[in-house]
Amino acid sequence: MIRRFRALPLRTRLALLVATAVAVAVAAVAAASWLLTRQQLRNELDTSLQGMNATRTYLTATVTDCQDESRTAPGTAAPSTAYVQVVQPDGSRCVGIGSKALQVQESDLDVAQQLIPDTLHDGHTTDGQKVRVYTRQDGPTGLTVSIARPLSEIDGALNQLALLLLTVAGVGVVGAGAAGLWIARTGLRPVNDLTGAVEHIARTQDLTVRIPLEGDDDDEIARLSRSFNAMTSALASSRDLQQQLIADAGHELRTPLTSLRTNIELLVRSEETGRAIPPDDRKALLASVKAQMTELAALIGDLQELSRPDATPTGKIQVIALHEITEAALERARLRAGPELTLTADLSPWYVRAEPPALERALVNLLDNAVKFSPRNSTIEVTLHQGELTVRDHGPGIPPDELPHVFDRFWRSPTARSLPGSGLGLSIVARTVQQCGGQVTLRAADGGGTAAVVRLPGAATPPPGTP
Image 1: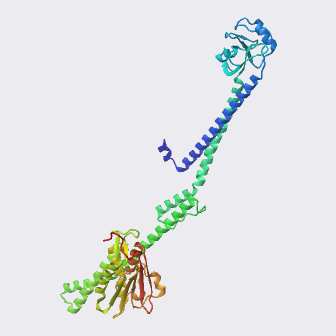
Image 2: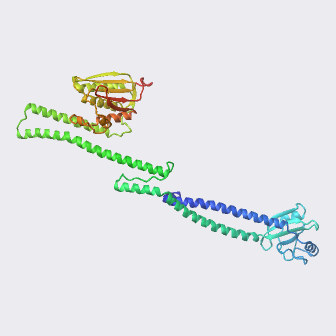
Image 3: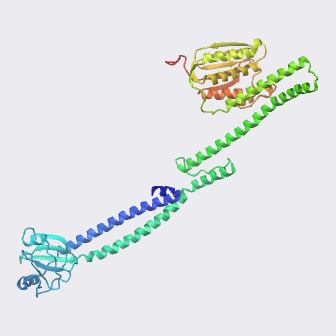
């Protein structure tokens, strides 16, 4: 049953829940009203019985002329609105003229035997009619008198009331169901709009669709619409970035591949025609091929690095010495810089939580960027104090209008188009530093050149238990 209910549409379930809740409430009110009315009518009937008196003439005639319970007193008739009989201590009875005989119960005998003063109970006539009986002692005559009235007097009213309550309850439940359906349709209209938008996006791949916001900040539907709009915006931005990455990667790959293809075709043509290439030219051609292959390998490595999820590093996060990682990156940068550049280091101990290979690769990219733009016989100064790593070069610097773009993927300054590189190095630096909980900035250095500043959270001493 529950499975069938859950299989129904949400609008139908809401309407059924509203109708059920109203039905239960109406049924409870109707039952309470019927019971209270029944109790009130019975109380009024009991009060009327207790206030009703058989005439003295009737009672006297009953005692004088009633010989057994099969006879009725020939005197004055019983009151027309009730059944009256006299109960003897031995259980016999004398029924008044115009009355029906009442079944004598034990409580009636207790009153006749003067064990209790009176009694009030439901009973039956000898022909089976339901009655309400009041039995008491009549003081002046000393007789035990049972006075009864038919319960049909109140049963008819109760039956009419029950029919009325059932009719009202039925109308209320039907109205509640209709109201519940209307409420469900009205309340779920934003959900229907959201469903339509999702179906449209799934069908057309159009991520520009937005759901109109209705309601305040605490409204669940408004929050759902806002979250959906934020999700589609993020998806659209992600798709645009993906398309841009593919376009930029294709552009960057095309240049070295074209040059590599041209050089290889020259070598192949020389072999096919038998016309040898001069040794110096051949050596330069092979060096160009090697450099282009190295550039392709570096570009592919950078693309693989950037293809990793931004939020979760793939390697093991551990506590590492930033000063040692920086020293290792400096050794690699010195090999690439050659004797024409001087790299100085002033490194204070600092320990951070990071992925060692990724952080070292980022620092190498940062130092390579400084090496690339440093003039000959210049110095690159590297300092690390209180978690702030600064790489300062004495190159041409970066124009202020280009600073906001230096960490974008594939972005390269117009002045650096002729230099080797893919434009991904600083993007990898920024992403790795962010994964470590830090930040990186580039600014113009005093006296010319550029200063790259990396700030990473950590401590000057290693945590206990760090190897």
